[in-house]
Amino acid sequence: MNRVAQTSRLWLRRASRSALVLAARRRRNSQPETAALPRRGLAARAADRVRGNLRPNPVWVASLAIILAFIAGPARGLDWPQWRGPNRDGISQETGLLKEWPKAGPNLLWQQKNIGNGYSTPAIVGNRIYLLSNQGLENEFVQALSTKDGSRVWFTPVGKVGNPKQDPNYPAARSTPTVVGDALYALGSDGDLVCLETANGKERWRKSLRADFGGKPGEWAYAESPLIDGEAVVCTPGGSDATLVALNRKSGDVVWKCPVPGGDEAAYASAVVVEAAGVKQYVQFLQNGLASVDAKSGKFLWRHDKTAKGSPAVIITPLADKEYIYSGAYRVGGGLIKPVGKDGVIKVEEIYFSPKLPVGIGGVVKVGDYLFGSTGQGLLCVEFKTGEIKWEERGLGPASWLFADNRLYLHGENGDVAIIEPSSAAYREKGRFTPPEQPKRLNQMEKAWAYPVIANGRLYIRDVGSLWCYGIKVEK
Image 1 (tube, one colour):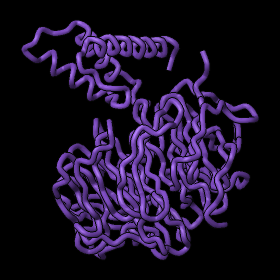
Image 2 (cartoon, rainbow, N blue to C red; image 1 turned 30 degrees about the vertical axis):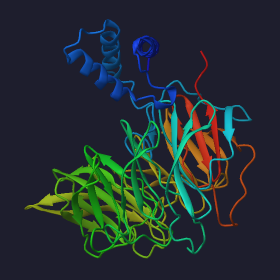
Image 3 (cartoon, rainbow, N blue to C red; image 1 turned 120 degrees about the vertical axis):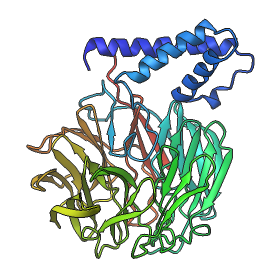
């Protein structure tokens, strides 16, 4: 983004903030800071006021104009409202970030060491951090924290931890909440799906994937992060009755249920939206393979088992790029497919497959023509269209991935955090550090599995019971 665009964007933010503050002062029953609404909610309220019979307040009219100008421009996606970011692809639209770090790492703004256990990645909207955690095995909960210092604003119990006798034993919260407007959707590891109010955590509705849909999770319980698409909440109970379901996001009522042939267990990936063969689809990586359903009707469309067959743990969320879909699983390998329609039937065309391609827990991210991800040993750069490996690096070991402002951010399973160039020529590290006061591990096999998050100029790293917040914006 050029300097003019950056300046305009900054002015819009400041002008909008000032106008909204003035408007809030004029309101007799203004809400507390803990109930701050997202931009979309404010715009809708302002629009309702302008359309009403009351005489328009000029401050609100100005606020609306500023907000709409800001929303219409290119500077969107500063929040991180769901699993893997605004588009579920591990990409942030943040700009103006540090291109390399000092030896000690970027500036640590704060650390919270009492957020509860778990591997959940935070969702961040405005001045709130939303996170799933657990205390012991009987109390899994959603909490809202302040971005100012990580202090707790509210918390709401969800249920108990699922499959507490799993082997190997890592019973904990796993899902990332999804935030849309004034509502939050979260899935507990025992299959408790809840819709909560973001302002105070009040429950609107709940479902049990086990009790309501005969759900069957894998060995390590439920880990999926709910997909919100329009008015639908899409999730994966697993099993033969309702392998995938869509619910009305406002009421929780069933829109459709899809029994996928094979009745797979739910694995640990999250569903994504794919437009392929002229059909809008929801694609999910189940325990025995990729499966696709028609987004509107819930009709089963196709499945592809090659990248999951024989894996004990199908984890990474599929990466969709237009009509192409990448998937991979531990002890199997990775590959690219393309759904192709012919005579009203969709079939899968395999582009490539290799046991050497990324399958790591930390997922994959596509930057330009290249795919970045991990194996069990280290990091890889792969040409997306061909599957050709361009480089391998084992120094950091396996990691989870995020891309922002022409840099890749990595949270290593060893706890280290690194920043690298998205180069296909070689691994080019631009900084690495270890967050202070690392948590104690449950056992020797437990690793730092939570994905990094970037929102509003800050980098958030979660590891079991700790959350670190770093300032990564270039200082003016």
